[in-house]
Length: 623
Image 1 (cartoon, rainbow, N blue to C red):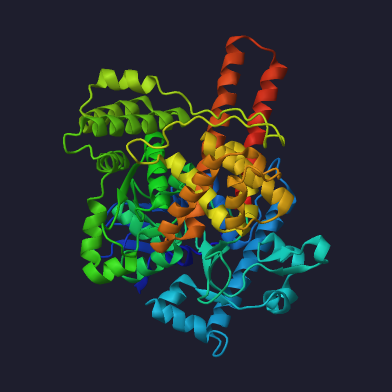
Image 2 (tube, helix red, strand yellow):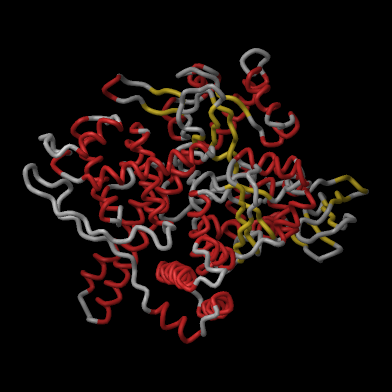
């Protein structure tokens, strides 16, 4: 602690002014208009005359970050560059962390300097100006620029200061394909760079937004997983939003980096983002250290609807209020703030319905269940209870919270609690149908898939939307298949037709290379063709291919972001699969305990659970 100056530490969170022997500012732990928070540099101590918060540097970090003593101590030690011995840990872990932090810090300055370069940064500065981002805001978020070129970073100051292997560890460069020769190349090229910082303000990764006119199909690109960065655990903008989140006890989650930047510029400084992936338990656990309420502000498109379904599940299993807000019109956050102002924004956030209520209203609207339509009401209730039942099966729910949920669901649907309990107890874990062969053998007639209703009342479920979106995108843009197939396979599609179409597509990609959509349609509809694809002999799959691509093209016309929506859909299928596999292993383990199976068998099951967790983490790092 002697290495930490409490004035500098607190000054990162609170604007302090010298007053006599003390430094004074607004308390970060309660809302006030007159400063009553005092920091004494001589005693290395703080005290608030308003809420009575007091303590040393460790107490401040504990209270600010809502962490335990050891976590606060580690945070202070890392800031001071001090290593804390860790029993059972690897010594190299500490040095790896230090290298990544130092490399990211140097890269941040490098990218900032490129943005300010009179010639090379001109187009990027003009773009920021066109988006309404002021130079002051750009400096606050430390926005920079990665210029076009495969080795600009490697040949610059960072290449002289760090070994290529160290830059690779930090995710700043990638290793070349061995078949194309040795060496490394820059991860980020021709992109606006947004440093991703942890709650303490340390740069742990980067997000890059492609510059206008680029041919790169990936609009946003995040750093790969590193010893410090995992996007499933990281919240962008939290270091700057934390104080306002604590004051309001509300965190507002928007969709992208620029949404966070513009919200802060307009004064909505409790806005953060989850880096274009589905919200996870880790995101919620991090945010609820600072807030009692999390408001998700998403577009009502495919990705947004999937996020709502995920929010319902998290609402059940996490001790925090999760609410959903929408603008009701096609506006970005900055457009809404410019049109209606900060006061209207704050009213919108304050009045946002919690996830259960929002989802029910959404289903009522989708199924036209609010105009006396009994069939619509029945379908809406069935879809609603299926979603809640599956969410309960996915993770443990506190009994008291579950009782409150049942009471609220009863009020919304008008169904007595006893009937609700009976209906929800009948919900079974979603299971995948076994796949006997990835592709039917040539000259063997394939059985036609069962014609189960694809929709309830004309509306696809969240799982169905995710499956359709993934198929539609890879059919239209075959180059994206390589990314998709690293994480999911045909067996992850639970609908018969969609799984069979995926099997055909995966087989074609492996055997023939990237298919042209028109050629694939011809093959799917041509019974006389002798190719492996044509042997499926299913015009039904041809119709499905047209359906899913039409849906994706329709969203594209409304400027839906392919990249973030695809990532959300993949995450949705992956998390569903992992949840079911985990639940199956846990059930087997519980059953083995009841049946008094041997210790070796139980240890083997526990090992499988651990291995599954490692595989899940590894697969997410590919995304």
